[in-house]
Image (tube, rainbow, N blue to C red):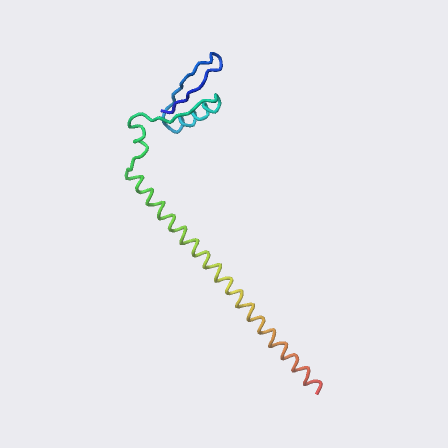
Length: 118
């Protein structure tokens, strides 16, 4: 049970206050310790800590689902990266083709101009 030791503002005596060993009790004890300038000590009683470390079938299934989800996200991210790389390569190829066509067109225009002069 989380225990807060603090000094009473009225009498000046050192006092202790205990809270339930669950999420609400931990939050309340932390807030109480900060408010009164006390010291917080998390000291679970026997078997209280063991309740939070259960490895039931549901927890195992959830962990497995999380692992599979993480693997899917990594695969999805890799696929997205590959798609971006393909798009960049495609744009670079298109630019090279346009450059080549522009060079050929300039050459043809230059040759047509020379033929008219001659």
